[in-house]
Image 1 (tube, rainbow, N blue to C red):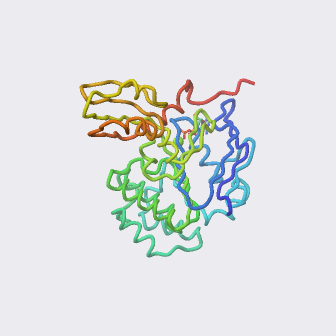
Image 2: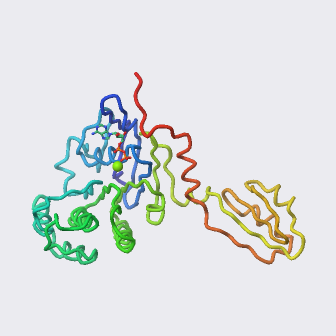
Image 3: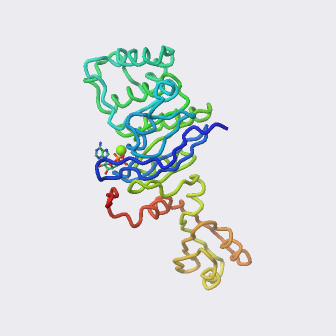
Amino acid sequence: METVIKTRGLTKRFGRRTALDRLDLDVPPGVIVGYLGPNGAGKTTTIRLLAGLIRPTAGSAMVFGFDAADQYDALQRRIGYLPGDFVAYPDLTGTQYLNYFAHLYGGVDRNRIELLAKRFDLDLGVRIGALSRGNRQKVGIVQAFMHDPDLLILDEPTSGLDPLMQREFRALLRETRDAGRTVFLSSHMLSEVEAVADTVAILRAGRLVTVQSVQALKDRARRRLDLTFADVPPAARIHAVPGVQDVSVDGHTVRVTVTGSTAELLKAVAPYDVTNVLSHEADLEAAFLDYYDGQEEPCSATSS
Ligand SMILES: Nc1ncnc2c1ncn2[C@@H]1O[C@H](COP(=O)(O)OP(=O)(O)O)[C@@H](O)[C@H]1O
Ligand SMILES: [Mg+2]
């Protein structure tokens, strides 16, 4: 299958500052990738490189087999881009602004624009300058999706949207993915992407730390379990199970933290009379923060 995004050694320096350091990334079609990292990690820089808005200092960014920096014309219609700092012409109405872009794309189905606007409860007849931040963001969303592009590149897309609209937006992302399109979205908050992304790529100080499926991230996350026994709990037995930590006993109940699978633990207690098992939500945030550990500066400065 055609790789949608393929970067090799992709590097961007601003003066002595390395915003992105030798990124190697492959994104297949039909997935939602969450590009995660703290502020200053290099997410926007990556996205601007993928959208062909800035040139790499070194390395390459290929999108659908085209060089993002040099073959912008071939890519324009296939990419929907939402910048992080979406600012549109304040004197234009939403309709005027979108028509202008529809023209650049060589024509867009009017119905699709109307449907998107309606879906996000956006009045396209209003001057963009008179819209709230959230509503301006919606104009940007319509612009990114209106020509039904094969790849969506979205920089912190839900910022400024209220929870209801965020939910609608996530539904739109899933539909887009299910229709075979590819979505690459950045966020500095795990909670924003875990609900919708298939894969997360974690960036720290310009370097890619890991690429994992959300499921794998969940599997290695810590989880709290409360096990209640009919008799005195076999605390020593439980303690000996690999991956089990923080064992505490409260009457007939044992509280534990398990990293990864709970299968071994459940096997160990199977011979005993367990009367209740309470499983708490996996602490994905903690698993995610593990990747952030050791972070000192928001960006690595090149010393040579
Ligand atoms: N145009 C620029 N000129 C100088 N430094 C920049 C520029 N754009 C980004 N940077 C720096 O590059 C680093 C990465 O920034 P950015 O890609 O915006 O991170 P993120 O989007 O993850 O918050 C930051 O240290 C930022 O200050
Ligand atoms: Mg950014």
